[in-house]
Length: 376
Image (cartoon, rainbow, N blue to C red; front, side, top):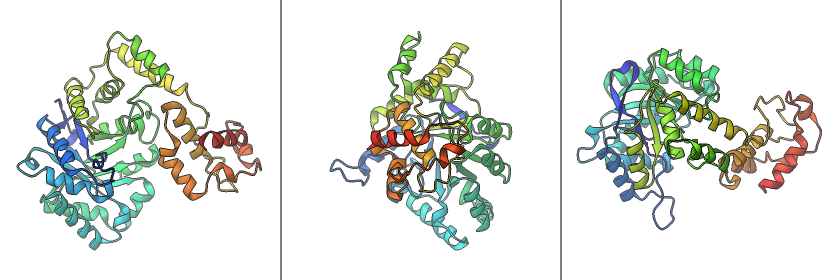
């Protein structure tokens, strides 16, 4: 296992961080975690050299922290650092923040949390956390020793990331990043900004929710033609670890074989080790994925709000994911959400307001009807 510097913190951590959000349910098909299997996987990773454990209060119906706490008994706690998170939905004042942290410490069976994160924030959520005194709470708990590092995980545009990152004395940040997200969310600009500030970056969604683990034909052809043979998973992780700003790459595993494969991969990675021809390959892979884009929607949202409530950019994004990565819309949370919320193309009456506003001049009405037929 390779170990990497955590920016200004002066500590090292494993290049592979175990994400504790994707453990399978038990053999009966229940959604409840198979605790025995999950504990075995966690300890297998730690025995292989993994030192970074990532969980959250809400993961796996609020059971992930409990299972991780059980897995870290018998001396395993001393071998790792724990990252867990405070969701904005669970706290409204200082008293609730105190109660939440105490509950998490109890579930994790520890007297301190190493990396404590404001969970999945954008600027709106960050301002909410500020309004309830979360920053002061983090400062106090760090002085008390209940948390070691003040952190946040981020989902939002770069401009909001830039503001949040420089508005407080953060110790670490977690972002979504992979070779397809270089211009999405915090993106490469955000990664490099954090690096300049000495703030270590932990990577989530390095495989884009598993979408980059299985390459479509045109992408696989590029991998096959390259003289060095690696799996799509290894190429994706190798590309991430080539960035010196990256401290740890999270990977959620639910099988022993996945743990073992990651241990092998992360024993071969390093910052700056990819030669120019490998970087060119990954750029060509990215372009090959983008060539599969079905709708040229940039997500600018000029077409919104739709008078009939159709979430046009979201629908186009779902359709592009179907084409790029083979996503089944019935299993896609975004598709499920628009159906539940009633924001589907079935509401479109062809008024044309969206097409008049679209800077890309897309045939939105025609595409919406085609897409809805394909999805349904």
